Image (tube, rainbow, N blue to C red; front, side):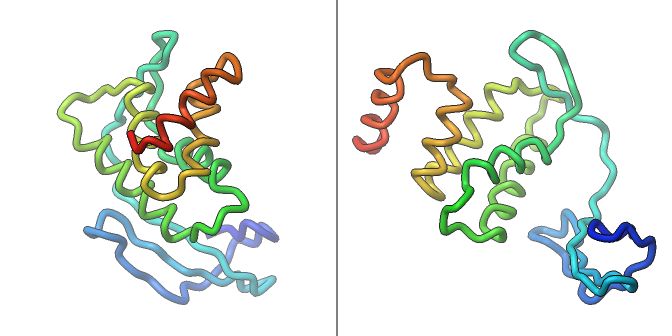
Length: 151
């Protein structure tokens, strides 16, 4: 496995653990060149699951896109990476358990927002502001008021 820091091609596995429900294996590795540590995940290669975008385009489901969006929303918040990864695993499982082989990007966004609301309200508002593309301050305030009401 190539080191993400120095790009050396050799690393050693320090620890391997199955994630929840055994869907993937988390490996803690150490580069044999620079001795820095990093984490890799091994997952089963599955039949592509398609996401239908707002403009009608279709693309393969990519959990990393969700992870990147959630990480941006959770920036500088007291949320552990383990909690974020567990949430992403839940979302991934829910999306893939859908009986259809396609899902809309809107449905995925709603699932993410539902989970973020439970995890951290500030991260939820950050994600919602990008996802819902608030047109003005009033639409943003309406979302905050609904959050305060507990909806």
